[in-house]
Image (cartoon, rainbow, N blue to C red; front, side):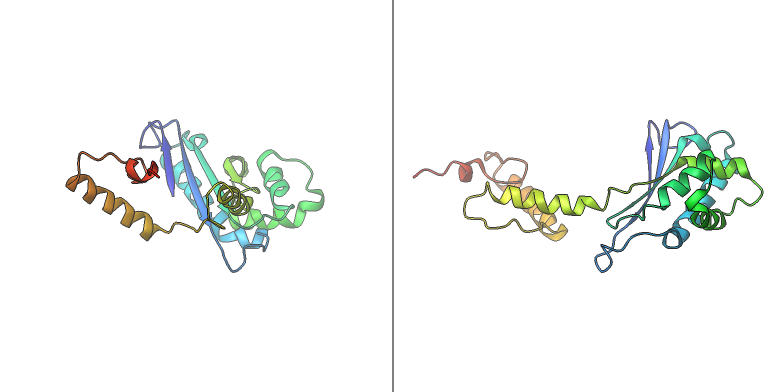
Length: 190
């Protein structure tokens, strides 16, 4: 997935974020390791090389993000940092070696450093699911008679939106708030 800021093309945009989203319900607590990220690193590195080849000088505008609901092993981020800015391999030599192989910049040290400098792996994204659950529990405490708040799935949201459009067409004089609730139902008289 790519998102442009400032314009639609890389040349005109302020920046373009290429985002790889990975979601797992079966392995939500399993850490991402370097081998697990291998395919993603290969694909994003290929995109970086294409940008560098086809639009030289614009590669600093490209940001590559990896987001997942799974945690990232502690050794992954320091290994990426070593490849981005250099430094001692230390305890991360194994991870660095495999990241180099997956990225495939064999004879292009500047390209490799540039890519890993633009690669962002968010180690906190896995906490969003937990935060969402906590938010829903907190919200449920404010709703009268609601022991829990259920997930709103896409079909429900779509059917609500469709119903809202139909109701607006049939009853243009009744105003509704954003979620389609009639103002009459919000202020029920005793």
